[in-house]
Length: 238
Image 1 (cartoon, one colour):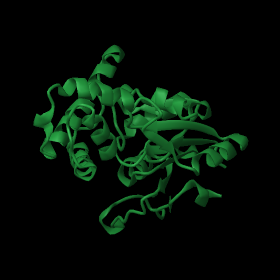
Image 2 (cartoon, one colour; image 1 turned 90 degrees about the horizontal axis):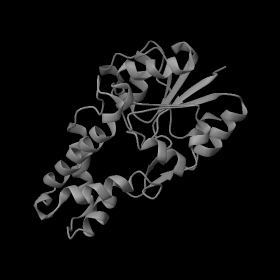
Image 3 (spheres, helix red, strand yellow; image 1 turned 180 degrees about the horizontal axis):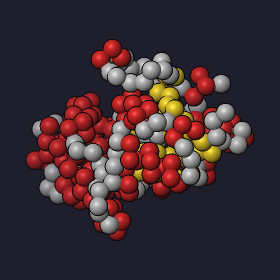
Image 4 (cartoon, helix red, strand yellow; image 1 turned 45 degrees about the horizontal axis):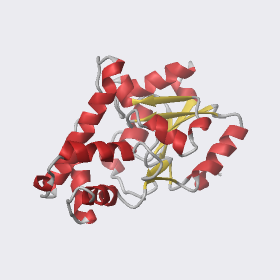
């Protein structure tokens, strides 16, 4: 029986209300910039996909929050550039500061309805729960504001470890916090590459929480000898 479960955060436990483009466009409007949320959402994901991993190896802890902010400002600025409306901002850093702070609150997020029942059941079964995520330091206030923090005995994020999923180092760092062997831990996350492939490569058992019912060509991927385990919600677990 599994004694420890690692869980991804965004896309697994909670997600953005509406879309990233909607949130960005709403706040941009306060700064006199108008853009279609659909266009901005597509531009954001294009920018996000092309960004380097959000990890800062060898950097002292005190400098990490500023580096996180700069990383996200670069991604956001590129999104507005792709959408062709970056030039409309008179003070982009001021806009971004408000946007960045907004995502540290509960307001732009929602918790998936299947999450609390699953967490409560696992907790009642005596299973230890932990978060392993490529999120930034805002994960701490976000988890707290969404009433999720109390469920987890540890939180491991890429910016603090200096390694982002699917790299094995972030999983190793989380395992060390619990003093356990990889084969005794189950990791669950919504990203096939970062969560499922990353965890299995690190020696953990893994389940792909395929909420969006994405298709992957398994023939082109060398995974493990065991069949791919995937569910579309936590309800499927029970």
